[in-house]
Length: 120
Image (cartoon, rainbow, N blue to C red; front, top):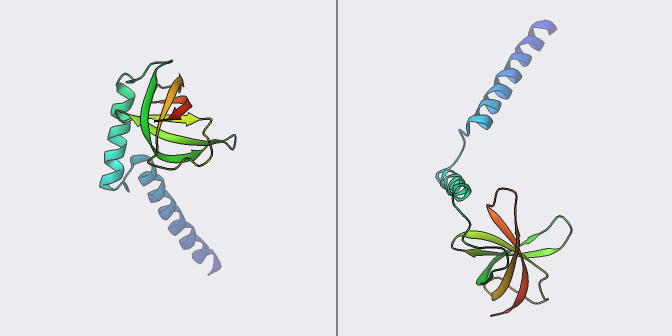
């Protein structure tokens, strides 16, 4: 009796895990917003960045992110292109408009790193 119960429980676990695995790799649980976001990400990977290293740009702070080094970075956008701005002064808040200088791109050129210049 114990062997049959274990076999049935093992089969249930296998089916549940297998269905989760299939959905995970096929993306079956994406909402419309997630699918749209993924499409935008794919298009961003295919286009040339609208900024160059050394350019100075002005943008509002979209939000803040914490870098793995523990530093707080501002997330800004230039024509929808994401720029992470470092070396922020204290008291900066989301929606503040700042100037920043582009320092480098990430590996896929889908975002850039910049340094804070001044409030605009």
